[in-house]
Amino acid sequence: MYKTRISHLTYDFKTLRNLMAKATPARSGDYLAGVAAADNLERVAAQWVLADVPLKQFLNEALVPYEQDEVTRLIIDGHDNEAFAVISHLTVGDFRNWLLSVHATTAVLTALAPGLTPEMVAAVSKIMRIQDLILVAKKCRVITRFRNTIGLENRLSTRLQPNHPTDNPAGVAASLVDGLLYGCGDAVIGINPASDNLEATLRLLHMLDEVIEAYQIPTQSCVLAHVTTTLKAIAQGAPVDLVFQSIAGTQKANDSFGINLNLLNEAHLAALELGRGTLGDNCMYFETGQGSALSANAHHGLDQQTCEVRAYAVARQFKPLLVNTVVGFIGPEYLYDGKQIIRAGLEDHFCGKLLGLPMGCDVCYTNHAEADQDDMDMLLTQLAVAGGTFIMGVPGADDVMLNYQSTSFHDALYLRQVLGLRPAPEFEHWLQKHQIFNAENQLLPQREIPALFKASLKKLTEHGNES
Image (cartoon, rainbow, N blue to C red; front, side, top):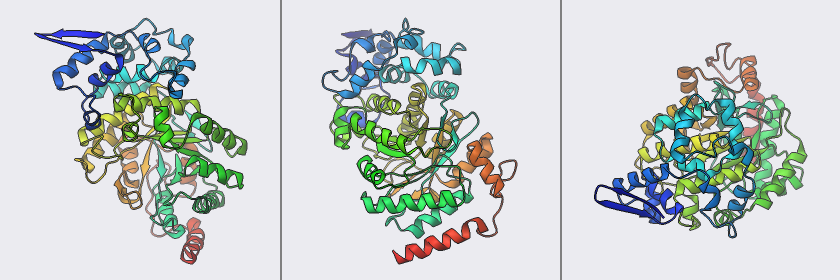
């Protein structure tokens, strides 16, 4: 029993799971699930009690039963007690103070990451202000490599997202070239296929590989098909760089995605065997989102943010190149307005980085949410200040296939100009070599499509028309 008294009111929180949910900043998904605090007073009471919970308690009281859930088993069985020893004597509140102190340096936080469980990290985020989340996340440094180096200090990468509603190669090519000419694509050139079938996946994989190989672009490609489709593509000899999968924080939610840890391990090993990375072997790309477990009725009474952070334990197991929280994509049923989306995006980034993940964020919203591009500008800027690893680059910030609002090629230019951020070093050199950027990383004006791309764009356009 977790209990406190405020004035004449007594608050009882029967379990740690209940306490965590009540302490969570307000969001529509938790009200939908019936786990949120009744009012701000109960929320503050829960946060007050949560601050006094010892971190060790999260190793003793599983929020989702160990016997029923392979994600819980992964978290508990993989916990590094030696790394945890540094902070094992602290409460959640003490942990917050320690994270904000000068003692929590980048090197110390890197060494600590294996000793943290998602529940510990979710708990401390619930009693932190936005500036706290930014300050601590900025101190975390997570570096990954495949064909370039992601996550270095004062760098910001982008996923070039040239989606097309019919997977038409000409349409994809036009968006792809447009993005490259704005300096986007160093995190990955990643396409969401309109239809998750093997034929479409193979066609897009070969197209992206041809472009990357023809112009020696130091980046990686990914077709965001289901992991089973990608495994079939690998079996047919397709040029797969990164294996993608959406993941969640409970076994039941992952079941709804048609995946489990064994399947992800099989895909990881298959991608490693291809050996397509030139600088490293971080070959997985995961996406997550607050509310996914609840939408599958697989949240076990947990609040959606804690479920989200548990998904990061799944991601961490496979040493990914990229992890992307698609923060506002599921809709206002889970994150109602701009205020909730901003808070959730910064929580996700903080929690992922603290757990040792290369966190990016799809700064996004659906058209029926109480949010607009001004809200996204706020989250975009705060994430960049907090050391975000990568953002999306979508033509005009409007994804014509997925029908949601994200960030544009210009948004990356804005952040790089205002905050002095640069692309991945290998990609930066390529941009300068082909006179897309100058030596000061400023975009050079293009009077026409550079000769570098003319032949391939013509070829892909002709192929698209034939299709």
